[in-house]
Length: 270
Image 1: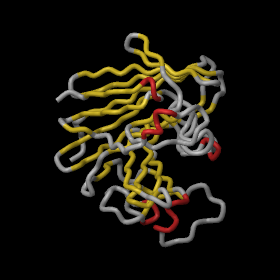
Image 2 (image 1 turned 120 degrees about the vertical axis):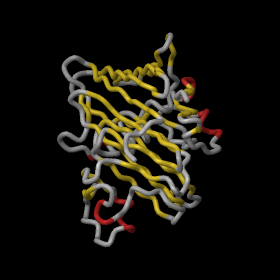
Image 3 (image 1 turned 90 degrees about the vertical axis):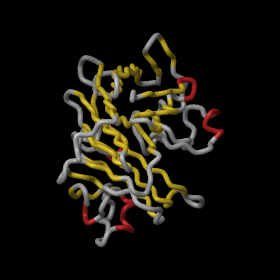
């Protein structure tokens, strides 16, 4: 079955539907205030997939593109922000979808981008990435670790699928935890029963990763809910302010960065 994507350019370019393999993959929650946001507002989590750029955490919250209207010209969607312009073109080819992105900005502009996809997954779902891949855990994981969190450390690193002994490849039932991680790979696959969703990034000269948000009823206080995110990313940190050398994407002398996100219901892993 074909991959089908529906977006909402008037409200931040949010993806409102991602169908692949005969099922809807995106999770949603009731948040009518999402339609009234303005640039600079705190993030409103309505689910779906948000384009987060130039950061995910930090300032501005979830980036600067989700709160602005996008324009549409033929098959291209575009958003203009103060320091950059982002365009995307979505193409479906049978059971695959290819989304081509172009960021235009001054040379030297540093950023993190994430396809902040919140997926509607059962407690039996699993995430498959290359075993041994370097994986960063962030401070909210501290209560789930058997070792103390180092003072002032923005992250701790281990190996996929269980960095620092914390198994992350299974989503599982709600247990009151919320963990964010960044897996140093450009491709992964989600298994949920017989269903598959594979995600892959292609780019030249930029850091790529897959961000994981496994919120099993641990966030936000005081009214937590379940939300599970698998988020292809340019960069290796959630917050651009935490980026060290090589942790953020950077615009070259040409003034453009290009990348492609590919989604398919076919997965090469068992």
